[in-house]
Image (cartoon, rainbow over all chains, first blue to last red; front, side, top):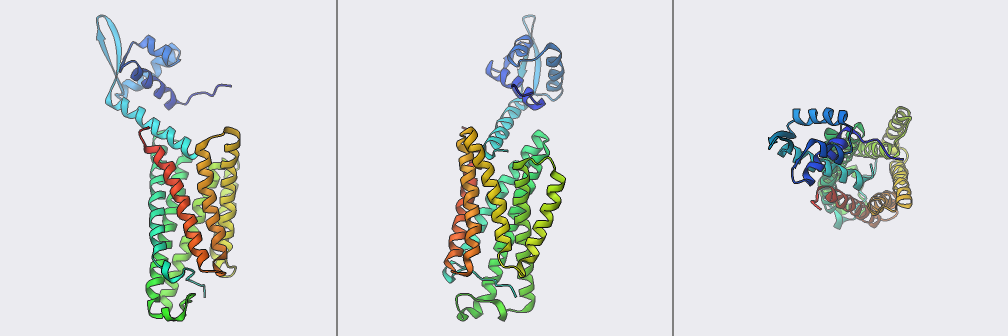
Amino acid sequence: MSVRRTKIEIINDMLSSIQTKGGRIKPTHLMYKANLSHKLLNTYLDDLLRNEMVKEVRQKNYKYLIITDKGHDFVNEFRRVKKFQESFGI
Amino acid sequence: MIRLVFSPDWFFNIDSLFEFFSLIVTVLISLQAFRTWKFTGEKKYRIVGLSFASISLSLLFKALTNVTVYNSQTVERTIGRFIVTYHTSYQIYLFIVVLIVLYRLFFLLGIWGFFNIVYQSKDRHQLWVTGILLVTIATFLETETLFMFHIIAAVILGFIVKYYLSICTTRKDRCMKKMAMAFSLLLLSQISYIFTSLSAEMYVVAEAFQLLGFIFLLVQYYKTVSKK
């Protein structure tokens, strides 16, 4: 049985997806990569934009999402927290 | 009067260094747990942070006890290996007793808090009430019932070891083997403390087990901060 992802897990999945695509991704690709519905993508994307973890840019009529330093910091902190949880079994 | 010195002469102050090292390890773990709590917002990490902070405080009180006892004792060292501080002033004696009580109280509260988290009790409120009661009894009855503190600490640590061993068998997780090892060493140290009345060398054995236990915890902590 799959476990429901928490909010920070979803945010991490979104930011990690952008990272693996070289720091830049189209919103539709992000939706598939992070395994989200359109509605949920918009909800979390608003959060990420408000917290300046990603920024929107337009290039050749396409909208792209770019991960910021703050977004990279979030992913690093998430990894550290995961390692702590795994190392201490809590 | 409580017996205050269990260490052989040659080990005086070395144990305080051991305590200081262990204190640094627990402070690091505590800070990481608070950081995790701040990031995830999950209350259990705040309790883990508080538990390790409590163990840090207990180790600080233990180191202070050792330093105070050994320094107030130098005048009377000719009395023998197991010096009882009848010759130190009553004020110093009282100060040392307060430090010992604080050491026991914070150590038991710390391991009890961590025990609560690893078992994720559903009836947490009741567990905390009984736990605090147990810790209070163990801390203050020590003057009457020798080694009650170490026995209760060993029981709590035994349950924590049992938890990690159960994960090892179900998940075959190497990390959990190290955690089981760390808490087993801390458990062995508490068992060894019980026998310090029989031999001063048992105190050294207990301190060595405790140090090894905290080294294992440091290794686990290092995994958290390492870039790999």
